[in-house]
Image (tube, rainbow, N blue to C red; front, side, top):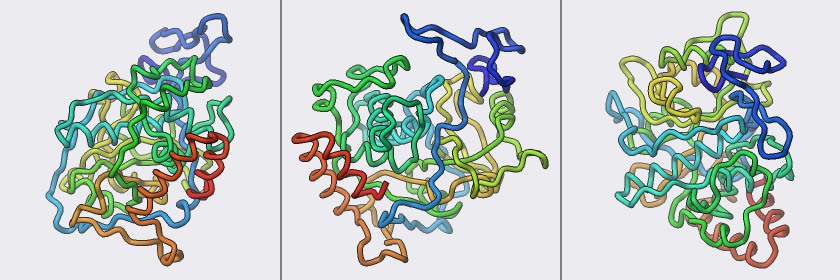
Length: 339
């Protein structure tokens, strides 16, 4: 846990106030129990393997420019507060990015709506459990994303089911396809084509504290080395740029604009490669219409690979199911995404 104001690593159990800046670390929501205000780094559930039959977007990184910075097309940095909604924040941020880049009026989208429905897919609506990135994407494909004003980000409402009118107002990202990218070259290739990439990573809390102060993630110390292959959880952020000369990615966090440099920080590419969950990096866009991308099926499941149009057909079918029976729709979503 980290302080929500100065991002200092906190002792366990969480004290009443931050030892460094004296910020209050607990709050009472209405008449309910006390809630911690501390920042979490375990809201991303580690995916040990990618969902079966998901396409991989392949772009040529060798032709990429030396630097890319997509911040001009990013929506304002969000603050997930103390919820484990980092993957929802990253995916919704990528969708908001696409709308802005396409010249459409920017619309703030509901991260809490996505987080609720993603947890529904793991039968954990009453728990602040976090999610895999794939669960968040499945939620967006099936349920859509309504405007923020329809279901605002109030953490005391995290386990409340949105009413039907909110589902009816959800934007379904029609025509957009989700795909994985593999390795640093895959990430750089996607960024060079103007698409941010979700990053799932397992880092010591001290690294987030230092990045908050300096705007750059440090390498873990020898006694802090974490093996992502055995980790159960981590944190999800959005990669929105790179600098090949410096060997860094540009990372957008979801801890508000006070963290890092306006909510952003540099990360060594080697660190993302060493500590990231490489099976869990995703992009979203009009991939089947982009000549710079080739959607390759997973080698082990080539015959049954989900192409971009296949995902669109699945989305339409699943949304029709929602109109008849939400519980049955959840089961069908999980079957389609092998969740």
